[in-house]
Length: 376
Image (cartoon, rainbow, N blue to C red; front, top):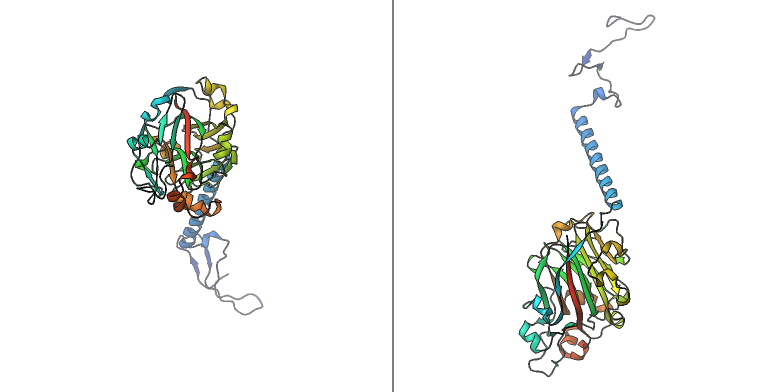
């Protein structure tokens, strides 16, 4: 029908010009709205918007898939063969350590003394069977000098440093008492937190909550993944710049530190540090695996660890390196202040430390031998 003609029996019907789109792919009557479902009429902006939405959906889907994958995956803790590298034992135990002095990075109310003063005050001593590190109990409020600026204590750091290994610690007595903050740990104190921190044994005050095993790291280290452990997980984020440097801790029972632990004769702490992850076992004196006694330790036979820090969402090799073994007893300090209100301790921390030397009668470590194995 020609344009401008009329339908039979009706008035003439006028038709508009037919306009091709810029691609020449179709036409429509001028003045009418294009159907939204017809992609032929979508503008360039619409196509760009759709492309952006598709990309976002794909990214979200991939991220969700990775997250689900991490939560369900678990590293390969297959058997390794370990060979004894270092033994710290007997009268020469402290010869393997440097004595830390100077300002306490943890803001404790403490004076860490050098080796000659520690020996003079009998704060470190060793026999063929055991080594002891303790807090000073000789200085009272009437002494000159007194402890009004902090009490004498000791922090030692091993001369050897490590990038992995199996560490066996024979611990017979753990320190406890209001105002104390003892720890057995590994770190690179010159490059903290970049090179990480592994707290094998740590508690505060009377230590009635038991032992806490904790990692402190730089960013991008999380334990919100599948884990195989017997003790209770606390924070998942190991990043020291988050959560007030709480780290990613695992809390043991009340018998794993302090008076209850000591009454049972202590035991063995075993820490395996490898690319697959970091695991810590605590064995009671009556339940030490025979392969530890025979110096052929095999963690693959020990069952679930007390604390498990798998490498699933934390590259252990990147976050932990060049760590020394540290044994110390801090007084007051950040962690103690944070726990003081629930500690059951009276007065305030600095007053107890300054004026009550008798409060630190049980504030000492007694250890047997420390052994370090390397995978061969």
